Image 1 (tube, helix red, strand yellow):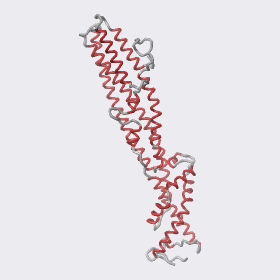
Image 2 (cartoon, helix red, strand yellow; image 1 turned 135 degrees about the horizontal axis):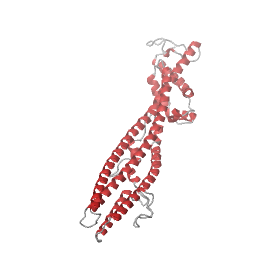
Image 3 (cartoon, one colour; image 1 turned 120 degrees about the vertical axis):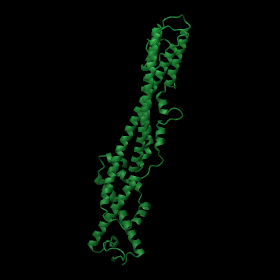
Image 4 (spheres, one colour; image 1 turned 30 degrees about the horizontal axis):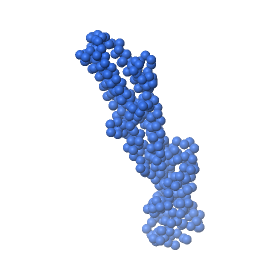
Length: 382
């Protein structure tokens, strides 16, 4: 078949190239070059789709909810889980029970003859402090303290070890479906998640600071009341209301001390999740940079875009499956696409050639069909 000049196109147009490999060598070389251009254009278009594949059915709100960071009713599940005890109650409830028990003992003491109660009170206060800080009560505590009960801080630290592992596992599981999306889409989702985690952490830190201020005020009130009791020789009677006020101040101090500890650990846990999310972000950003470099390399070799771009895009949509092509290259590389940027075994030069080797046959087929369409429309004639 001889190639004539199209009536409405410049002589240099690729439509002037014969689809046959017979004829002059110059035309054969020109055809090969143009087919290479088409293959590069297809490769660039495929990489665009790889980078922009949308994230399916995954919201940041759902991830944060799964991690227990969003308040449900009155308390975020994470905060409640941090306070959970071996008896399936909360440390706040246990603190309230201990304060209530101390109040009842205080009431019974008031019925006894007036006497100095300093030693009794100091021992009670020490017992409460030791429950808060120690792993298990010692023999120096009053007999009414449960001998097998772990200390408050010990329980908190035990809980955070478990919750840290659980939260990191939940984050990995929540993001599992994300890795099938395009690198740009994944980056957008991860950055959005990081923003929300930063907000949650800032909120926890603000709550912690508020609790510390309230705890400090309560301790100041308690020490002021203790001085009044000392002025009265620590006499305990029904008319001495400073004892009740001192107990209330003590209870408030420990209440906010406990809450400050909970928010501290919660903030640390969110910080761990942020680090994990940011590590994923760095990984995906490196992959996206590699894909962008690949896309740029192919684009640079498309100095003149194919004239049948609408037909090419339709063909690409109907017959070139970017997901299947991605799976093929992932199998060749031995790594998922979103790990290419951090894998030393994935060389960009070899990746370029692998992609081209799969697209060259398609380029020839597409080129042939486009030229046949052009002949039908009368752009080419014998």
